[in-house]
Image (cartoon, rainbow, N blue to C red; front, side, top):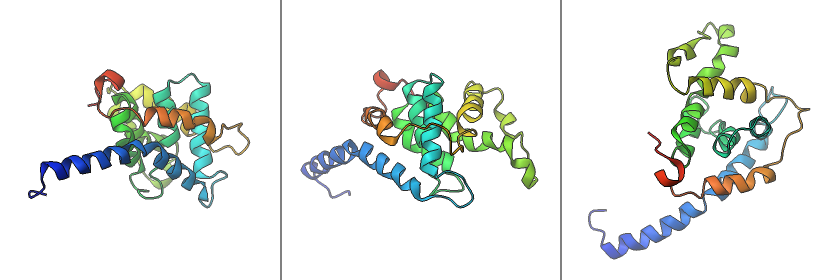
Length: 183
């Protein structure tokens, strides 16, 4: 890298900008890949994500939170032990800090529903009780995520959410004029 010329780096930068421009296509592709099913569940991971986003939309959530609901489990396949962090890092440059924080912490907050079955502390989320986004994460989990395993729920299609995915993931990353600070 230290031997690269300005011309070479400008050339690579143009290619990288084009690659970044196609991010919405890769996000949609990754979501479609969640349709392979996970044994034991009544819905696929894709159906779960679509259902979570549908519930968020029906509940009046803003676009950033709806797209977060759609991609919140995107990391299940490649990062099953820390899927929340994985998904948060994907959306971090494109949404406000609150949305990123909710996605990043939803895995811990969900434990309130089942951790006791495994001898774990179901109130681990209490650690964050004084955090300004605590209530937002509780709402995300209670109203949208934990309820979205219903095979009979009228769920919107990925095509319905595609314009939203394209809009959010086409933003200029880290642009406070567009999304505000995300620290």
